[in-house]
Length: 161
Image (tube, rainbow, N blue to C red):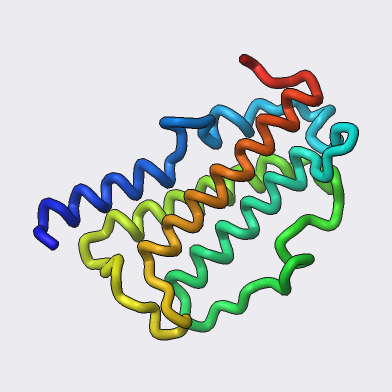
């Protein structure tokens, strides 16, 4: 692939990871959820905003660490990927989860944008994965659950548009 094509692919991946475009971004959907509904599950909906945020954070962190750390051990599926509570356990948990999510998302964006990162090389500790696949997995997973957060906000009457 030509150098310009690699640069374009890297930029497109970073943009995809940022979110938005055809749907709500993380910054549109999450930070301004009122504290009094963060732990509420709408009627007949299995997750609260907190559960979805923490699930996204845990899964994204797992994918990032798998992408860059051969010794990484993933949480046990599925229970290790979901919080144990419907509501943030402390008054600082919500903001801490958002900060960690942003930090890990930026780290994956930086990994993808780095010209030294071979997007196509198999990760020796995996079973066929590469950085391209892992970046796409994060973008896809985040978009799916951000849509759920928007739905939860609508059902709880706290969506802003």
